[in-house]
Amino acid sequence: MKKDEIYERLNKVFRDIFDDDSIVVTESTTSNDIEDWDSLEHINLIVAIEQEFNMKFNMNEVTTMKNVGEMVDIIISRI
Image (cartoon, rainbow, N blue to C red; front, side, top):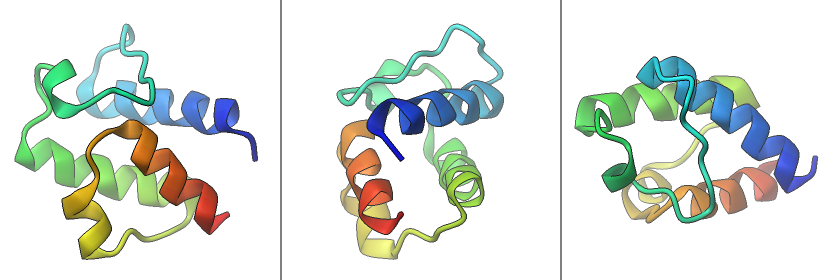
């Protein structure tokens, strides 16, 4: 799977979780860029991404990800 395919799927997940069809994530997107991205929504987001890509992040990955680009790198390493 290519990075652009991953970003397309992530955009869908982010739009669903935050109920905002205008969201377009990039490698530098962080929680500061999306108004409703708080700690509770972060958990919902991680679970939805794990389901979308049929994988599990470990706790260290979840707590150290700085942006969507790092998330994509982890997803690529798992598929």
